[in-house]
Length: 406
Image (cartoon, rainbow, N blue to C red; front, side, top):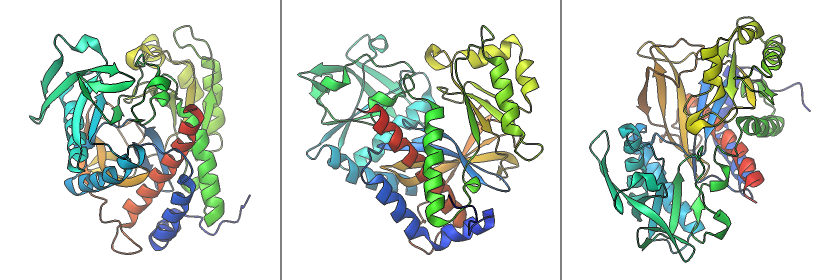
């Protein structure tokens, strides 16, 4: 493998991405061409003084309500192209949301997602297999911004997914399945994307970042870029039980092992490998801090959304953000459809510092548009690099889907 890379600094990377935008995207397109791509995804990107790195990848993203209208148009254009590839005669698209219907901000998300698909020329039906939501055949809700939503009780009729009695031609899954939907997906005729087989009941962050590591090394070898500019280092710890204090010493040793080769002052994110919504994360400066965790801290790391028991841990280099919004530390989230960047926002948090997990209490969102990223001109370098990182992360998720969707 190359060690004398032509591109060794973050500034050099910025310039390279700006000047080689077409070649970079052609490379990624070619890699994705033969792989199963997620219908959509979102990637959290941290930018420090010395690098960019993805720190989370969501295959069933919420937050479409946080992207700007120009970018929403870009998402619509991609949905218009990709849905017929999976269902050539599709007219009715079903959306299966999460069951937390009392979260009115989440309802904004599915309302805007529905709008993007409706604007692409499809009829949209919301439906759920969670019978606990229904006292009748439909559930009527109002989102935070006042959008009316009608969710139908989902049924399987002759192998097809239906919203009530109405057959859907294609289904968009917006449910991360930390609580799996109890269906035999192999016997469902209706195309459903992203794959229902890669929910958090099966998926692991560790696997994603292992694939990302390989993807980045291939990319950097091809373009002669130092891979440290595009990746947070990480370790994996298995067979952990925080409630029983099993494996705590292994995590502590892993933290110290990671930090010993990183610049002084770097911290480590100890993440549950199946954690979502910013849950199951602790930020530490040494292995000793892991050993010193009290019961409350261990409980936070033990059980996640829908009572998932965390048994595998990702120990990840803390990437200190240099971004700020209204003097609050911030990070970028990029949204993609069919592996192409379509929009994004900044997540800021007044209750956290630049080294902390910002996906937590106190966070706010700022829309920004990346739609001006075009050919090798008239685009902003930073947004282009964020898009690159998000696309590489999504390429890694293609390999994940290939692994699970057999």
